[in-house]
Amino acid sequence: MIIAKIEPLALSAGSLSLLLCRVTTKSGLIGYGECLCNRPPMQQALFATIRDALAALYIGKSVDDREALNLAARRRFASFGRAGTVLNALAAIEIALWDIAGKAAGKSVSELLGGARRTRLPVMASLDKYDDKAKVRARLEQALATGVKAAKVHEAPLEIIEE
Image 1 (spheres, helix red, strand yellow):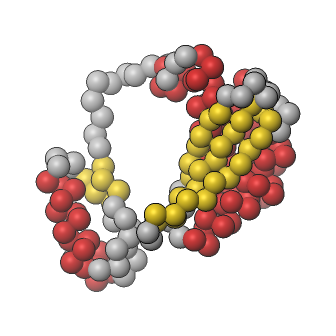
Image 2 (image 1 turned 120 degrees about the vertical axis):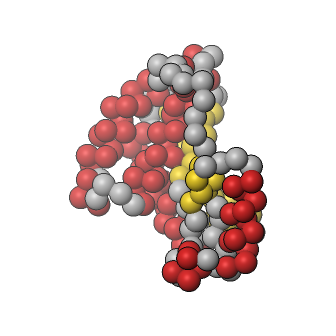
């Protein structure tokens, strides 16, 4: 399966900014990936990174070579560090390639990676960024009431985190 097109897709829902990556093969299979992005400027940076810097490295290559392609891209952009925009953008492409591989094989990505090793997994609630003590407290209480054992807040001001 040859990669024909890689498209970043910027989505917004209220204050939430998302970035998806759609990879299309020449045979028409489509895979989707996503990357961490919670602010419009980061969304714009990730969009441009996928469109302008990364997509060309994958076009015309085989989905079956996804692990080698990802390693080569990581090496090529190593001077930009081991975290941040480039790695988040690469993650979106890699997830989309695994999505395609799973669809082509008629298997879940979990099965492609060796199958489930557990019947239960702990779950953590990852909350939105509210910048408001009362909203954070209410949403945290709501999340904990569902039975999750941990929650992640995305607030920056210490007084909100301490609340």
